Amino acid sequence: MNTAHIWQDIKAQLEAELEASTYDEIFASIDAIYEVKNNYIYLVVENDYVKKRIELMFLKKLNRMLEHHVLEKHEFRFLTSDEVDEKTRLSREKVEPTETSEYPRTNLNPSYTFNNFVVGLSNRLGYMSAVKVADQPGIVANPLFIFGDVGLGKTHLMQAVGNYVLENDINAKVLYIKADQFVEDYVRHANKKKYTEFSQSYEGIDVLLVDDIQFLSKKEKSQEEFFKLFEQLYHQQKQIVITSDRKASDLKDIMSRLTSRFAWGVTVDINRPDLDHRIKILEKKLNAETAEKDLIPKKVIEYIASVFDNNIRELEGALKRVLFYCTAFNCEFTIKNAELALENLIRPKANARDYMKDRVQNVLSATAAYYRISVSDLISKKRTRNYLYPRQIAMYLIKHLYDLPYKRIGQYFSNRDHSTVMHSVEKIANEMNLDTNIKVDVEKLILKCGEKD
Ligand code: ADP
Ligand code: MG
Image (tube, rainbow, N blue to C red; front, side, top):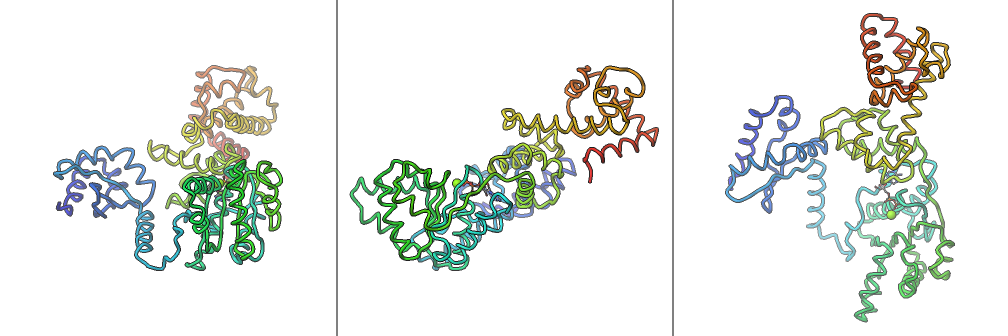
């Protein structure tokens, strides 16, 4: 297949068919086919944002166009330049014969590094201990026992130890295994009576990372095996890191002979991150996801961080979803759109509404204070000018800042109907254009509501 011209032809066709701005933004910079493999034609795009946009909005069209250029069915696939780098790195690793370990190095997630771990009050101790352990495996804290609720970074931190050790010593044998895999592995060997083979497969480990040890519960035979392995590594001063969803003394269904040994080293717990910490985590993820800094306004980030407060995995998921939603539907990153993107995740969470309620209350009290009236007069049905005007301003501010539906705004003002709110908002918007005093009032109030820094 002569692929060289295919993309150029399709590109020309796209240029003719699409709006110039869309073409320029998405396709103009894609210049050559990266690879043709297994009936897929790979193209490289700048970042995840462009990739998702293409996949959602243009892929079908592109594949249809492609049909006219190829004899056998092919499809387009898109890679970001980061993914290409990663691919090249992996294939380079494959050919380099430095690999003497029988344990696959790729068993660690390469993005679970100390660098990517955002440190805050809730995990500082865990982080510091893990760094020390990674720096001097087997010496400073053995075993390192990390416990905490799901989604708070235990696996990440544990694997960061492994990645760090490997970075400094390419020949170190780091084994990451989930406790339930260990059990399965044991059962599989035991069924075939291949006990020696089982023990041999765990020989020669320098760093053993055992994730979610609670899964050893009630598996007595596996516990025995693990105990042996633990003893052996411990006495050879090989580093062991263990995570658990509860503290060692609460692991009731695991023999105490084993759990008591967990206390020989250092135990640290990871807790829920506070709001500031969550914001930092989101900012870090955002930097990693997109090339564009400040793609999402700070207040939208704050909104996401305020809603997802007890699990970092969910927090991350929410960010990805907002990114995807707003790029796919080509809409602005506003709180309102974030709310829409996250609707299904949030609905069960009352705190999303609480957050909005909070913001609205904030606008109401700031406006009332500014005009020296009470909040109850502000939201009342009293029609004197000194209440009416501030009320219209408040409605305008809520719409302008949070883009809530008119109907919902009306509910905050003694259940006024949506047309009243709409007229007020429009009236203020028009008057702002005519009267700079009003404009200044509004701007001052936006500042007072803390919505601009
Ligand atoms: P756990 O093992 O405690 O259930 P994970 O380690 O799997 O949690 O973490 C869940 C997700 O949150 C992972 O994607 C991880 O990278 C991310 N994460 C957790 N803690 C942090 C942190 N402090 N900084 C950055 N990302 C984090
Ligand atoms: Mg985990």
